[in-house]
Image (cartoon, rainbow, N blue to C red; front, top):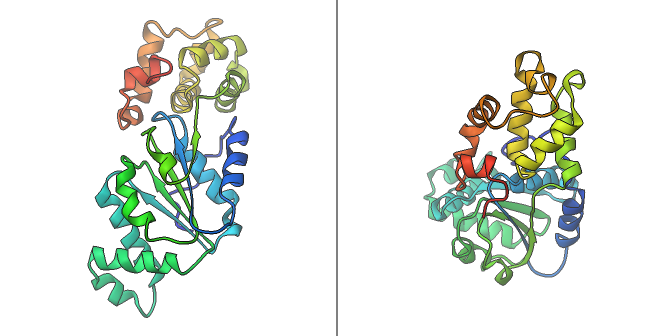
Length: 256
């Protein structure tokens, strides 16, 4: 199983979406494609990871492709070829060009059924069309921030922010009981727009703050001065990797 990492241990509020994926990605005639779309930081990749791990026994092959750009998609398919050819054919696969290896991988997929390929963070529908058109069986799971065009190739799941109770639950799973304050957590979850990535960074920051100061000193976290600056600094590295700026995604609520 070719996943980039283990799914996060803390994963709440997405059972309905996992069930929807299970129902959509059923074995049937032709290739089945499902797109999960939503804001950066909303949890699309995490949802795909959890689905793939939970249902790994349904497949003979699970392969993850970082699909940010047409070249990355080709490289990921070429990597699949080389993984499948490990052993006696490894040398030939290693010497093949990216185009040749990609063609071989697509030919393999076209003649097998029990596989799942995940294209993570696809930028444009057109980047996938040339490849999906050559597949006749199997299942494809796509994640993307782009919200248009996916109906042409499969079904669409629009991933929203967490429900308020789930957002608070996510914070609670990250913060020690001794400093837990449900009212402060609810206020913080609302301020962060119930966005999973921002909540995880905020919870991690609070967890390492000496003495749990943000919760210990009052009923709410100070997100207007020092507290806000500290949380923003803790979240900035990951947030800046998204197309949504760190200030918008972390502090501006529901961006987009």
